[in-house]
Length: 492
Image (cartoon, rainbow, N blue to C red; front, top):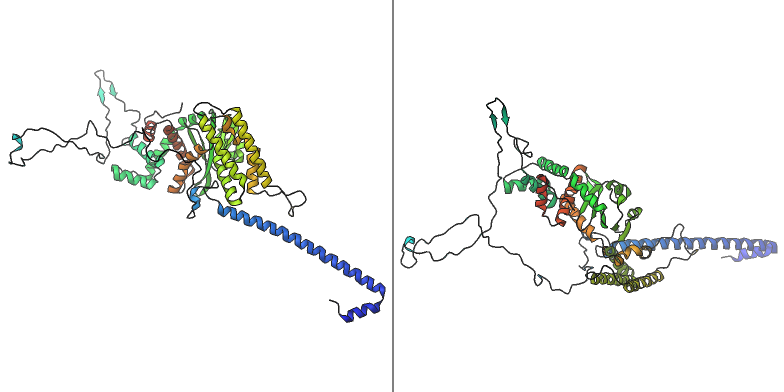
């Protein structure tokens, strides 16, 4: 504020000085106003960035296994209330009418019979020889056989002929060492380690406790390596089977190999499973696995972008979409997301209702669903507009919100989202691959990591074979036994 002495000095200085000083003051005011405007713009930009960052962090904290692709193990102690995406069935819980129950059944040919005789008459004390047997009541106890292995000694003769020729018989091809384990022991070892997922030490301990056969971890590793080597041809046949399949599910999950992050990839159908572990997750791994390069069917996956690098048809997992839509509806409060959830579920229900009688929906049903889908997409764009050009305070590409990104995916890839409407061979979701890869995660929880790349690859090959055999109604132990007797199962 100007003092009276300063004002008097300006008055005495003359008009030219006054004008000059006023112009200087105007320039200073303009500079201060410009600086203030710049500070306001900078503050607004920083505030916008901070608000977006806070919202992003809030979204991260709000994510769980019900509204995102996170596994249930990541929920910790703050697990959401159980709420399945599946609609509740009208059937009562428990066994359904007509279901054949299972219980311990009496054996017609018991291995051993224990007969208990009457020692004397309860009334007169007569001897049992003077009494007539008029009935026998039977009760059976089913138990495990005695512990221990069955040792079979193979002997070959050497005979001298009258002509002087010394002749010797030949051992069976699978009897190649002075002392060795038979196919039953090897099959049980692989079954416990690679199917029941016991760690090395506990598998060896179990053999000692149950069979009095304390094998070492080194011997167990050798058995697993032998099993993997014998599966080279069946493994290739499973892979060839998948390359020719019309629809194949794909997924991948992280796994530790010698403390380094690798990736377990799975390609599967209802009748075949193929696991491969690789240091990479994307295109390099796909090329090494060599299923997608020659695949011309439809690949079902969860929108991992490298999959789109191959010219096959694609289908997206709508179970993932439902979880993401739940997040957008609950955390961002956007009604279009709930409308899309209902639309996708109605599509799935219509396909399920029509599948027993036909292999496609009517043109009217498809057209009605597509119009409904389009209306929801348009409503979503109205709720998530982009900032008009020239109004943004920050530079660079405009960062889109999670609802906007999901909306654009559902719009631009609607053919892959709705693929199950036109072809009933295409599933609604990617649950087949997720179920197949789930046991890999169980193995990690039990054992933590693979000690070596060779062991990890052997595990995946053996697990591929076991999973494929079980999908074709062959028991796991029987399938493994067939490996060691030279007749492994292969898919048709």
